[in-house]
Length: 302
Length: 305
Image 1 (cartoon, chains in turn blue, orange):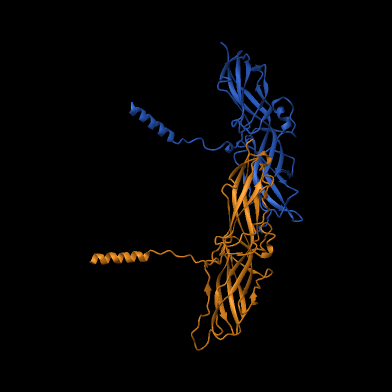
Image 2 (cartoon, chains in turn orange, green; image 1 turned 180 degrees about the horizontal axis):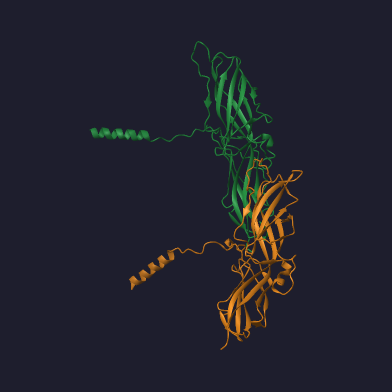
């Protein structure tokens, strides 16, 4: 009996002494402004089913996930189908969906159900697509560390905290439109008492969805006529150390995959300051839309 | 018997090898070494990671490891850079001047002066409410310093005389190693004797790893220094027999010695003393300059919303 007690005590001591590795990293190590996803929509497995019968109702479940870093307010999803083959009492739903945060690092998700009725077909079975589109206003915020170096010609003798360099950014900032490159230049003004930081910012539609002016986001999910002036428009606001920069255009037209904008701090920075690191904030506002499609076979009832 | 002799011999050898207690020479030469004022951050001040809203202290320990000044008032200052004042906006507690009593090593203070200075910011901020703000905090020191070297040189009125006689010294070059208790050192002295003149070529080197600056540029150090102020040393040289030698360059603030790749020289001509035989005398050399160095640490300000 004594031996057993002694053995148990020993085991307890050994267990107590064994170091267990806890999770590494801290709360703040998580970077929520990373990734190229915004709102991601997908069909739930077998919903809609691969095959349905004519004159039968079937459910279409759509999973909507906000995998980006911005909250969606008044987003829309809409069912799209050929009215010759399907009908549904409700074809669109609107929703709010929180993005990723330190409190919720995966972002909010919701499942929506649409009931669809397959109409009677003439003849044999048919393969017909059902589409679901998401339309939402979104924002990408890129905050990058940049160097302000007042010694443009490298003539000062003091040690520098940083040096000006271009930054290539991979992996996005938690939105489907991303800042992919920042080219930095320090220009001298006429009096040469100040330097003018200038940034050439490259923006890219990294998910390949449709872009529209943010105020018109819902139009992509409705029958409203679209204006050419609104399509592909990304609003931009650039600030350096909490001062707004003056850019060569007010917004970008992302007709191609990429576009560039040039922004400057016109007021400049006094040359007698030593080099320092500060933050450049680039805010992009846009409406975004993506569509998923599934082909369904409508079978004739025998 | 042989064994006994052998053991005694070994004991004698061992006792001979063990050194006795030596008294430290109180007249130790403090004008030795290649350091001036050195700095290091106090542990965790600044910390490598700090959170928005926290108090930030950047504490710097100062050690005067050189030999200047032995008495008098030390003049120096610290400046800080590397960050955006929108993130860190503080001030040096008690001002940015180094303690006036940060004297060098001396008989009265053999370890040299010591002080701690703290830059404090009460409420650090992450601009734009971003996730974090990274900064390389740099603390720069600028201080007025002097190197004092007094090597003994041989003054021989006629080193090339036809009939050689016994002399206390011979004219020649001499290497000075190990520094003179300052970050700029006299490293070599070359000597030649002319008919009426004794020539000295004095070699100077930056041995402290920092920047040497013209003394007139103290006020613009460190942020507005440019290459016009850099690598310049003011030199004063004299002897007991000539207090006003002619030097090239003049060794003044307007015509200083320029250090190229950290090294420079001054050529001085002294009037030959009217003596009959050779003798040793100190060549008093004083180098004046502002010295600057820096230390840095990376700090991340974290924003947990």
